[in-house]
Amino acid sequence: MGTIQEKPSVASSSSVGSTVVNEIRQTPILALIIFVPVVILLERFSPEAHTLLFVMSVLAIIPLAALLSRATEAVAAKTGDAVGGLLNATLGNLTELVISLAALQAGQYLLVKASIAGAIVTNTLFMLGGAFLFGGLKYHLQEFNRINARFQACLLFLATIAVLVPSLISQVDQPPALAVSQKLSLGLAIILIVVYALGMLFSLRTHRELFASVSHAEEHEKLWPVKLSIVMLVVVTLLVALVSEIFVGSVQVAAEQLGMTPAFVGFIVVALVGAAAEMTTAFSAARANRLDLSVGVALGSAVQIALFVAPILVLVSYFIGPEPMTLQFWRGAVTMMVVAAMAAALLSNGGRGAWYAGVMALALYAIFAFTLFVLPPATPS
Image (cartoon, rainbow, N blue to C red):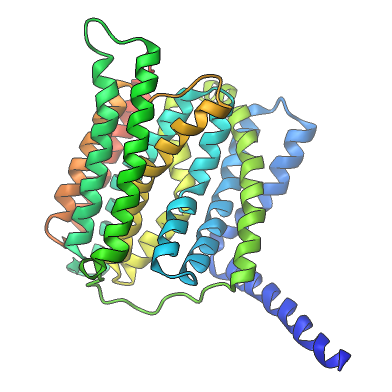
């Protein structure tokens, strides 16, 4: 009997190993995983090589984000819509959250706020525009659920208004004291989290029939086993935290040496790196004529950042930051977020996607990125 019981264990281990190997073969971006041990060793033996550490940590975070995305998808699929939605809200932007927590603890609030604003704009314009472009180059017109897209766009617009309020009152003749701004941001953070929780209840439970897909979906990829997914979530989260600490520690000096500001790094680099895995999903789904999934990933991720990650960072800053963080952004970042939210509403209004719509969204993102690179904010809050 003992030998009979051993065989499933061996087979199970072999199955897990083959699953990981097949995943690496099917997803070339995971080959970058080699940079994880490289950056850890480099930081240990050459901590003064800030630029090299910065580049290596960026390359290391990309495959870790991809692994987190796959593991989260597998766990969420086994837990039902409600719990799965909560898991996606908590873990879907875990890479950005961990990077922001490391920056928060280091007191680099500019990097934190730039990464928040950049993630919202990048997901809304770059990811959505890229999906429209890649899908439109293969299909003349693609359809998606207009109700779902407009719902996400409305949530995103609500979040940008919440960010706009503390930023506006700081521009009056007699700006309020820092304590007032902190208290206002704390209240707004709680409101946003409640709105997001109720939005999940609305879309996943009470009115779930309104959010059904209208795309011609192909078969989903084979999901990982739940045990493997949970182990991967724990291990990869720890690795992301470790690499993020190296990234945050090197970003300031590296940015100066590369001619970039922390605002540009947070707005563009961190946002693109953190969303690399989701972009892969969104673009490949669009090419498979599953534009519903692409739109859901792009706008849903932006909404998670705005209504979940940003408020959580405000709350957590009371415990791990040098001082409480506010939702007061510099004027340029607020403008870009508001314009991105309006663009999302316009792009989702018709329920159809074409390649030139993607070109316009990508052009708007390029305008923002180039402007921020050439004229970074002088005194961001």
